[in-house]
Image 1 (cartoon, rainbow, N blue to C red):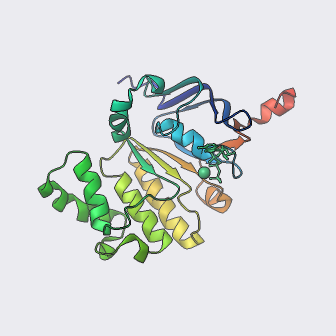
Image 2: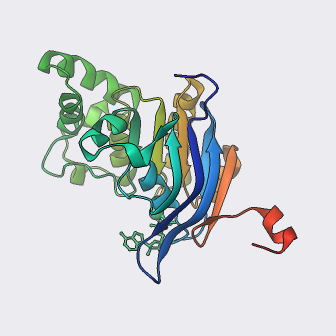
Image 3: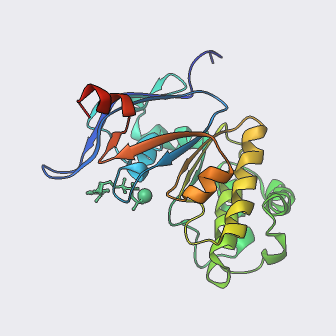
Length: 232
Ligand SMILES: Nc1ncnc2c1ncn2[C@@H]1O[C@H](COP(=O)(O)OP(=O)(O)OP(=O)(O)O)[C@@H](O)[C@H]1O
Ligand SMILES: [Mg+2]
């Protein structure tokens, strides 16, 4: 890999869901390796859609999207799992397996990336310890608070020490204290070199943990300069 490549580069990326609904409109942006980025904007502004383009859950309808120089449009459906191995994904709804215990949720993800049972036995407690949820290893997701479920989801996303972590509203529905715990976790990962992208409307959190903000509005990246030029 070329060290000078940005982590993510989007050039005029659009996602059109139907004639009326555009998920993204002409989005261009560049995120360098090792950056911590907030993706902000109102409900429906396209934050999750942008993240889903990066994870190939949503196919962009035009424009170019590159991760580490790799064109996402050229990743074959059979190779999408390989792309996702390079990223940790914390979805907006956590997507934990409801009928599996906390340790199994993390263990299954480790098995899915080819770890042996022995490695799983060794790694799961380490990961749960890192996200401070080891004491609830035997609980089912429904028995956990929102913040605890969020920590399991982050732990699961970290299993392969991915160079890129994508978290969609990781502090939604959490009080300030628990939100700060989650943010500290994400900032620590970033300090160790992981590129982190967080979609959020949680402005108090953005103010407490300042980093570059990419603001979205109606599917576009909002740039104050555009307004000055009158073509926003
Ligand atoms: N699968 C889909 N099919 C049709 N329209 C969709 C789909 N997913 C998203 N949309 C629409 O695209 C727009 C952007 O949605 P998106 O989920 O990206 O917003 P968001 O910024 O993440 O909002 P929130 O803050 O509520 O999570 C919305 O108008 C939404 O209704
Ligand atoms: Mg969303």
